[in-house]
Amino acid sequence: MSGTSSSASKLRGYVGRAADLRAGKITPRAYLDDCLKRIADQDGAIGAFVTLNKAGAAKAADASTARW
Image (tube, rainbow, N blue to C red; front, side):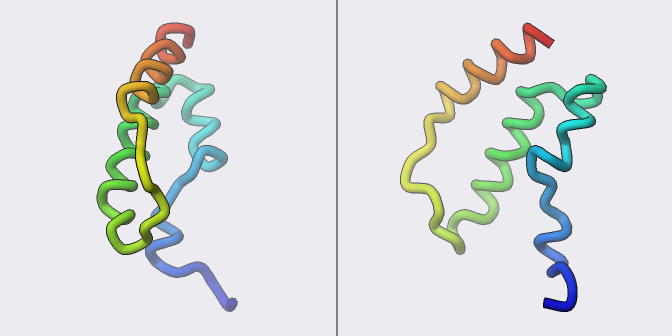
């Protein structure tokens, strides 16, 4: 492939956001909310997720945010 597609270049996974998390620019909960929004926006076309444990993920993200 000669380059990155425009939609792929807009996605920032964990590796791309790790420095922001470490620096406190974003919280684990904010990162989770961003991920859940991207899943909601894109998974209809992709079909990668059968189920999501949003409550469990939110609880874990909130606990992680409290530790940061």
